Image 1 (cartoon, rainbow, N blue to C red):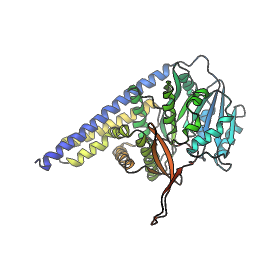
Image 2: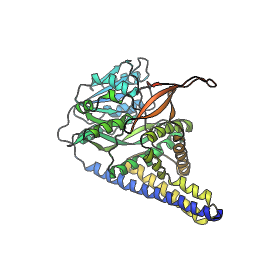
Image 3: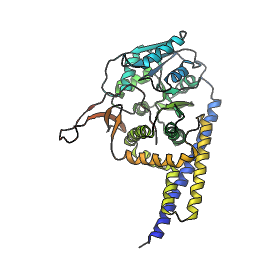
Image 4: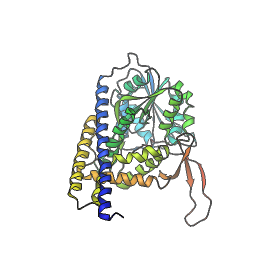
Length: 417
């Protein structure tokens, strides 16, 4: 039988190997991002760009909402209509929308206030109410918290006009709404794991659809089953991409990087947000989600340090991995245009928190969302449905009842761990 002083170094070496693999993956992500940024500067626009209707579902006066909407109004595009939508006549986003319309009387901006209920995903229900106001055959669906460079719409429409393409999507980085530690920590996984990780996935042939900004024709949307077919899916963007691919059409990644507002004001809010989406992604892609733990090299390096603290080599490896993690994060920020997020000293903490979120995501399918208790259920072919669970009062033996949930209509950001 092996003694503990033999076992621990072996386990430490395994943890260090995982950490080194994570660094290699980060290097591959940097290479993919550098190539993507280079191609984005060279790709020409389509010679003729069709009129487009941009759908922006709103819910509440979230941080930086006015700035995000302003970025869409200032798009360099020949002919576009913007449709803003809310489901409650008392929604505070209405004031922001009306101020935007008043500030840009020369722009074609419509505001839809329609409380018609739709059981299921509230954002999709909002879009269903908004769609009749869209006047054009080409549609762009963009989350309310997206900050778009001036050429975003031109680039996504150019991408979706390519032969064989049915939908175009965009990657994004996180933009902290405030300079607080929670917001900076929350932006870190988006900028340093999610963004380069999705580009690596593209290298490997995946065609995932990311809901930050999507473009498709009205005809293609109808062929997929329309917005109504997405009501039961909390990850509506992934489901839409799956349905487009089911038509034999491709999902293109437009050569532009948009920004999403990161507004988690506390560590608790950040962890709750990440746990909610960790459980959602885990339900959709359990194997891929589990393997993404390799994107957390400092968590493995810390594990090696805990198992073999007396070994000088482990300390040297830990310091080197920490330095690499910092350098790769700063290069990723520079290439993507993201503001610096996780501070140097907090990088190990960030990886450990992400590892804990991943562990927590496997303990339950129940999440909290805006006062609702939700159960993420798997239905059909790799699709995620959502249902609300009415829990009995604590201490009672009442039977739990499950029904389709009607969620608020705001954007539900997927924050990969």
